Length: 309
Image 1 (cartoon, one colour):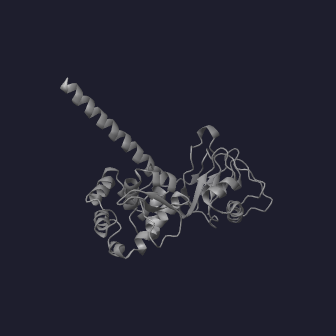
Image 2 (cartoon, rainbow, N blue to C red):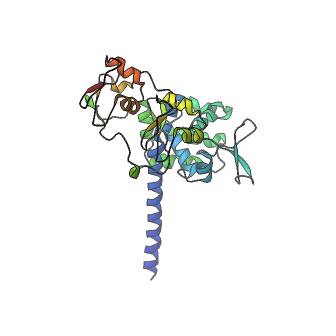
Image 3 (cartoon, rainbow, N blue to C red):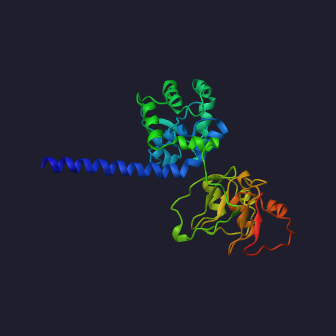
């Protein structure tokens, strides 16, 4: 009987670990681009950013993350003028920062570290020294838990988050891109539509995929931006209606595609247009006409090779 009980306890613990692992992996997949982008712009190890987000937000399941898009447990002190959420922490009803969307949380986390005097010494460390950063964050008082640094280090090592640092530094070995690049599945059908928006990065621009029922007006309201600007950024007029799977950018698209697409092409698939290609690669439609030397009235056809940069 004791052996059976011990087995059941062990099984429950193992299943719990598997559940957490799956939850962590899902979070890493969803937010890795944000962590990598922050490292490239602010020299904060992506592994540290991701480990802190996982630990502080419970892999995105905490009430702060779900309701307030706060993934790093940053409190609202006297210098914070935005909305707040009350939560018991070191003391009852402490104020925590609330953001409009997840990307703001990642950006504010980087700025919080950069602007905080007590974190200044961290930026003298190598961006690959995740152990130094973890111990430095604890020493500077980011969290009160005595095991905070060791927890961050364990998460980084358990989930191989140094891979994010290598990607940010361009040191990860990826398969060489093909001479011809194409993406046959460019839209998401309603049945495959995710339950919620997930912010991603493409060509230095943040975007989401529209889900069933989205409109430019509803997205503008959700993220606190102008509908007119959203339509302008995505090069559509006031009559265009969003479809599930459409890409919606939050800033004006770049004048050229990313460097990896130099001398590369996209092969037009059935149902694709130049506009769709411009959305897929985050580049302005006008650029595609210029680099391909198309006339304003040119209509591409299936099988055409579209130069991207």
